[in-house]
Image 1 (cartoon, rainbow, N blue to C red):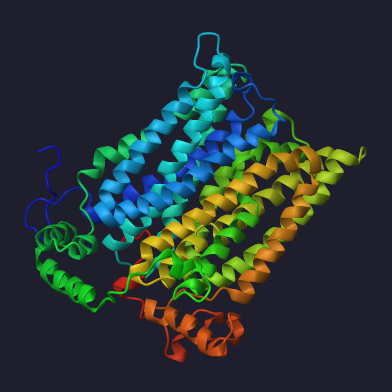
Image 2 (tube, one colour):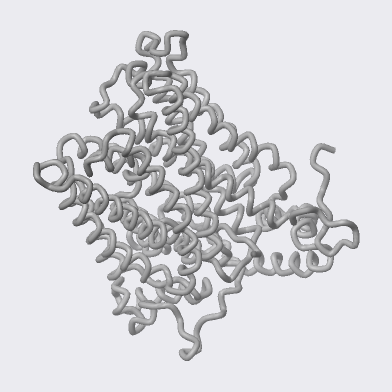
Length: 531
């Protein structure tokens, strides 16, 4: 037996080193690190001269942004296909298919233009292979982003939903940091004219899907999906593996009751995306959350970090070193994110985060202008102040925006709309980041440091929209969050302060008799742990 079943939690035999629950958390964390790695991977590939010659493009060509951004179009398609497959055939088969797709796309990127001389264009086919690889990789990663949240939420419970998700997203930043560090290391060792300086970081990405596929056999299918498919015996086995023999029967009965009580009404995408549909309002909260996150500009910072520091006056190599330092800071500052998200709430973090980012980008506009247009400006002072400002902006984004917009959809949709809601979130994330990463290099080439001012304006809009229309969903059960959308219908307004007397402007308070009730299966966290 290649993957022997682990001992149940209440077994008197020797227990495994880590529990099945922790295996699921590690699996989810590694999956999240996968798409973080891709963001960091392309940042230095874009500036490798061998890569540019092989693709037959200039560093200032719009094709640089197209190669990066077309990946996100693949993500949008992959999210829809994988969500459908996850409902039809199961969460695990869908995840396996997505991981296999990632491997194919990554290989196509790695072999594009591969030759002994290091810059063979393959008669123009190298660019075609790279574009195809980016799209196929996007199909896989988009599917993973849609299905992993469903898989994890159906296997885990934790009242600290925000903390659990923010901890998992810290691994996203670890993937970003790992990719950039490998990229920088091989670039320093081999130089920007060596093809292996850009091929090695690409092929290293294979570690993630290989590792995930190798441990999938140890993990159970979700009991909720098995119950929906009337596979009671398999559902019981999964519950025993997760919670032990003594708890399995009670939990199985609970899942049966939940399935019987659940509405038979099928929720379609039309119900979620067409005005007047039963889930249109929560879908617009989800859609605008992802759009506003893209408008913060941090998809661009993740992919084009070195170029941004160059706008502040750094040389190429110095900009790469400072970018690495920024990513290290980013990773550690995510600790503050999971310590604060369930204390301060999602809404407050996003609103204040947008104001902080707008201020930082306004300052960066000034520093960029001093660096490039004012000859007598003290270069070192501008570089230091600009770097500190960008480090602060990165920390603000990680704490306030990175995890929150992925968490909110898991708290506002009923189980019948969970898969579609997750897919919509990934689709909008993909389309929004496609637009931002496509336009950013064009902005660098034409606007220079004025691009920072654009991001200051877009952050101001993101903060205003969130303050006006996004309810506070933290600390409340699924049923309590549904009250907001029902009250919005009764009050004929989506403005948070006008709905239910402004009840959803803030986290629930104990003195109001609210809070502490977020225990229903319906509001299970996106990616939870028992730590």
